[in-house]
Image 1: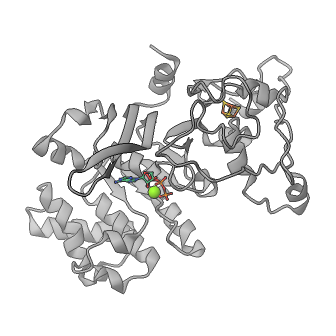
Image 2 (image 1 turned 180 degrees about the vertical axis):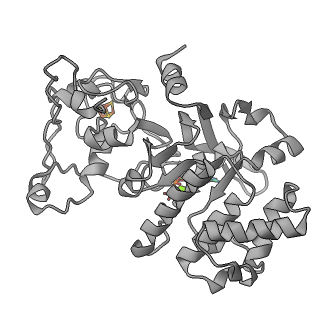
Image 3 (image 1 turned 135 degrees about the horizontal axis):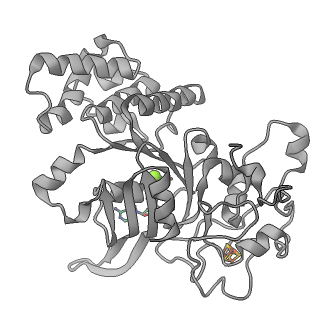
Length: 381
Ligand SMILES: Nc1ncnc2c1ncn2[C@@H]1O[C@H](COP(=O)(O)OP(=O)(O)OP(=O)(O)O)[C@@H](O)[C@H]1O
Ligand code: SF4
Ligand SMILES: [Mg+2]
């Protein structure tokens, strides 16, 4: 058994197990006969587990493959390679009716609630649709009671049942979208940018709602966002994605306290700090250039074309594995895909100067008096 599996068993049963998942879209050209002239490597080697009852936050820049991964996880996208198991069931082996039945256990909440809700259906019809498909609405009276309960759970009055999606505000529509996902009593919800289309004032309410529902219904979440600030409070663990694969994964607190991958450090350094003194002196890492095209990803470490710490050896030739690193204070749950993570964390390797950039060595905690390295990051029990 690997260290990962031991951790997973200790801390909670694994609900979702993703191994080596790739989704490559063919690029077709030709007037009469479609020829495949290349591929978009949208997801290119994702491995992760999500434990029952936890919230896994997946973040990364626009176009890095987050939505494609979420869709692949729910079998809404064909896998080019790899496997996804949900509750021990290998989803790729299911076809037709078996896959349809399994879908009840995994639902999606979308970024754009208006676009994802049929404008011609009332809320009642929208919520009943999934329940009917899974044989959960055969008794009209109990189905209606369930609809009213669902609306109450997401903070909408029962009068909403007869209304159409356009009659609601953005936040209310997202509540309808969440109620629809909940209607079939799923175990896993993939929420793809659930608040990014909403006003800032409403975002926190929807995030709080998701948290409360998780507790009430024992849900497991994969929350996708392009912004680390959005997933910070809701996530137990966070994975940072760059060009189709994870570059760092850690418990949420550990990731913010000690980001170890240069890309994560750059993402975090872009979030302003309200304290003006800290704001003036904090680390700022400016990345040069845009995200490279996933149709033509860089060799070796995919981040090497933008990495301020890029080295002449290994970076452009060898793709780094996501691995546990030996950095003082970093627990075994903290994994990084960088050949030089240890040397970067210790300050032995320094970033190449970019104008206007302030990069400080990581503030690694001193070993505790009783010899437990980095014990300031561990719970005091
Ligand atoms: N059906 C498809 N056919 C071809 N290319 C696709 C398809 N779906 C997505 N892509 C490409 O795959 C890459 C990843 O797209 P994806 O939508 O998964 O990114 P994302 O991280 O969710 O971005 P965003 O934050 O903008 O939502 C992009 O380059 C996108 O253009
Ligand atoms: S492997 Fe090299 S290029 Fe990639 S993140 Fe590490 S230092 Fe940067
Ligand atoms: Mg997306």
